[in-house]
Length: 402
Image (tube, rainbow, N blue to C red; front, side, top):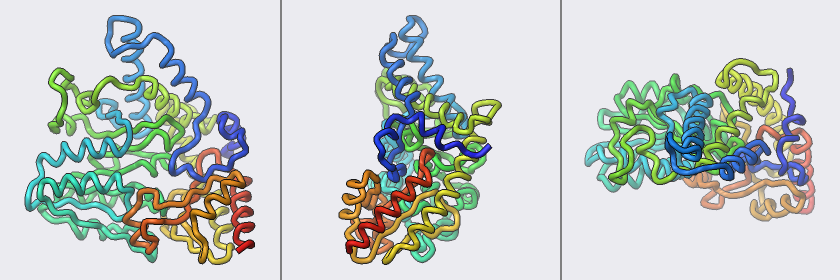
């Protein structure tokens, strides 16, 4: 059965406003069932985790279910799922932990393609330890992060490599499997930032190959928080800073303070919703997730082609998103047009079309866009052809005035 976007749209209260949302790469809208799950969790008996009182058991169940849901989404071990307030918080936490084994003469590799949350924490940790930072450069003509741009930098001194699974601006999807194989063969640790990739593809962490992976729930229909995953056996080898009375058990020892159980309940509900995007999907939750995300990817890619064709016909447009493999995300601008002004105009038309560098500062500079960046239009599970038509019509109206 074809992807039923109109059925899905009925589940999102924020879509009743008449807004057309192209800001999904910065955060998706949320279905009502997720809000209901959060409200239920925070208003029923709740206290710190435990196994004695009803409220303790409720808290414990939310944590267990959260780890199980993330494990099904990513095909990872639930004992390797670490909760975090944001991906930035998690990368900072783990950069300090991993850098404990770094020193002068060691090397790390980062990607110019990445969001700064997968750059600066590693750079700063390396600098603090006297390690050398190497940069994998983007091919600005093709929008690709060529595999060789990473693998050619590998040496016996390489301790760690961090690369995005998909660019949050260009949409570029590097060949993570090829990069990962080379990094692992080199004996180095490999981290994949899956924040922009996870909402648009089936993720198979166990076969990636990578040591670490993570995503932000609010980019995939959930609340504002993030998850960091690894093999539990690997987490056991890491010595992180923590409070003395807090647990040594993995993964809980990497989570600081009392957890927000209501947000964890929201993440679980969001993943359950993703599993039901294809309402004909059957089987385990993992099997339904795979089928639903496969259907979503096919739908989004078809709609993205329609959107790109519309954008390409507009006068003075430069589309920077040229990679062969990509998420449904377009980064573009128009000659003689201030992107921020166009952003405001489109907002007056109830079309959310943000303009910025979106924290992908290095790639914005490499493209000659400086720190200002460009316009970004991203599709989400609730995006429609009508939304795209409104986008193109609004842009045509603004450009005609110019």
